[in-house]
Image (cartoon, rainbow, N blue to C red):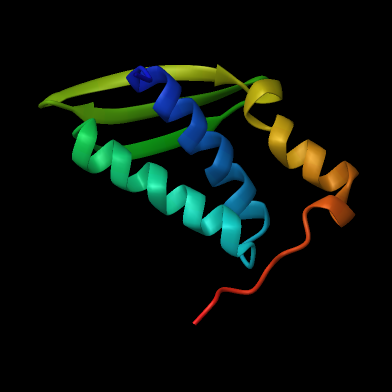
Length: 97
């Protein structure tokens, strides 16, 4: 079982990709999966993100409490960096009807 910290990490990593690549349907579908997991399985809401030069700060509501965590930018942005280095490996596939 993944910890809440793991789910937040994965969610934030794919959110960064989605923000940079809004037409990437695979990224959007993956983010939707993590959105649902955070909401229905982990009972997380009201997620807010801020950044500085080295960290992402995540504030959220969990079971009635405001909680905070942080992640190094280099870890969160690794997937986007890989996509940007080798875009031919990450061609967008249109959504199927």
